[in-house]
Length: 364
Ligand code: MRU
Image 1 (spheres, rainbow, N blue to C red):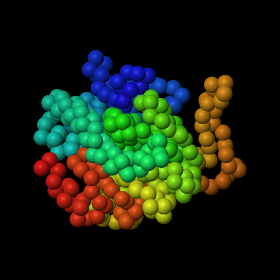
Image 2 (cartoon, rainbow, N blue to C red; image 1 turned 180 degrees about the vertical axis):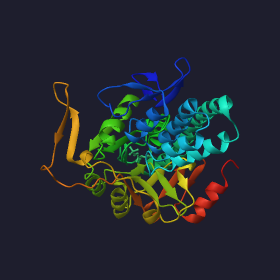
Image 3 (spheres, protein in one colour; image 1 turned 60 degrees about the vertical axis):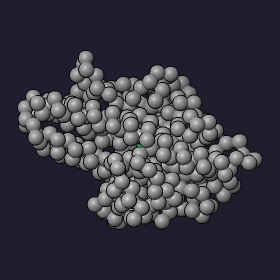
Image 4 (cartoon, rainbow, N blue to C red; image 1 turned 135 degrees about the horizontal axis):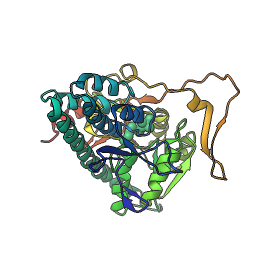
């Protein structure tokens, strides 16, 4: 991704300092702050506090966390993995990355294990970039086909997205936004409706910032506006990421995604979900009852933070004192509402049969 015109990733290893650099996403969009992760504790904090967030980026950060932890205690592999595994419950990419670390690193001890851990985290980082670029290419075919159908009387292709499934949710490219970037590279005039994505406003703060940095036309809307826009022919496709997709194609993503899928279905608008194969949890079928849904601090709902016109950071209360609030982080969109799943190895329908074929074909 370009940040202020320079190529930047969301995470990378700094060999001079022997630290892991991240973009602190809690400071966006007002301040671009890079942080150095120097310990297991730093990595756990970065994930739990959402300095890094987004399913694929959580996985890569965890792999670097394993390296930082082993540097402190090379014999502590299992306890390091356990500490990282409890930082956030919903995105399956976290346990996917940790399982990969366990599988490789249990074969080694001492300094060799530490070196291998760094090597593996760097491999996962590079893989994530390639995989996300592949998702972008696969999904751009769908948007291209849609644009060919729509072109008459229309000067732009309107895509609605929720939360941030962009470069900042991965190492680079993103998932849903990779599709947008690749479509724009092909000359399709994409315009993005960005849901603000309460309570943490990843849409307003992160997606708008990221799209502006890449020069993609976009408009911020409140979370409840999507249905209205769909009813008035202002949305050609809904395109979101995923934190976990089950064997039958149920999709867990940021809270509010389900309502967009319902509105899309009612208005006959395609609802696309883009994610890497590592976001599949093929051990479960029923997303509604089997995916742990993160519940976060009620303060995220009861307060809003931002900058005043004078540039001072401010947090204000928006509900009466002592109001009780429930803060569910994710919801599940049933497979029947999903038009297509987009992965790095291809696009398929959200059915058990199509998913089995897609996953069976990986690498083949
Ligand atoms: O709570 P977050 O910001 O980690 O939630 C992120 C999302 O819901 C994304 O849509 C999802 O992780 C896909 S990221 C490519």
